[in-house]
Amino acid sequence: MKHLTFYFDVVSPYAYLAFEQLPEALAGISHSVTYKPVLFAALLKQHGQRGPAELPGKREWTYRQVQWLAHSAGVDLQLPAAHPFNPLPLLRLALACDARGEPNRYVCETILRHVWRGGAAADDAARLAALTQTLAPACDPRDAAVKAELRAHTDEALALGLFGVPSIVVDGRVFWGLDALPMLRAYLLNDPWFAGPAWAAAASVAQGPGR
Image (tube, rainbow, N blue to C red; front, side, top):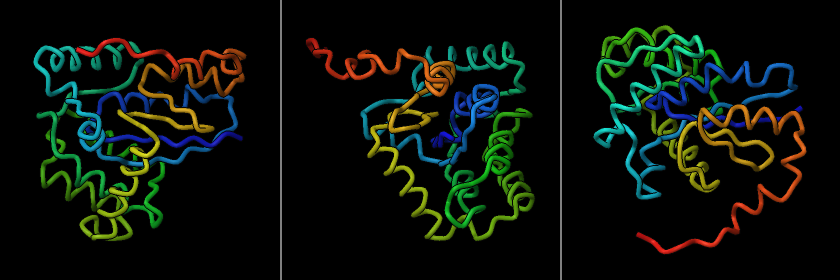
């Protein structure tokens, strides 16, 4: 059985879509999954990047594309009333629902759907209070230990070299993005390509002149 770690931030529509389609991608494969919320903004800062929703033109394209991808995959998705938003309360709520800081699929699903279904404001205080009551976390999401767990998950992601979400790690290999799900499935089904030189060779390509 293969064990996968799914790193995500609820602010990412691609993480939501990958989460919804993950069961199909893993169908028929013996596996287990650990879900780890991380702060996407910290990954962007570490690598000197800006998120797609922060760039004019790319922002609009992102929203069009994710709606199309959801439509074509039969996934229910409506954009939240405002985006991006501060995901920290939702990430901490997810972590507070498990003593080890590893929320189960139901918790992750409930929070992701809170954001990406219905078109309401993801960070609305009344909605957050209702969501918290529904999930009944084991501890207060505002506790210092919960905040530390989120930092630890994010630091772990950075140590692994992760630069975006969703990222799925299995056998030390990183599969980044919604569009990596077919590649992930091929790997788990022992596609011989992964035993060849291409994976490792990608890291040895010489870097050309910078901008």
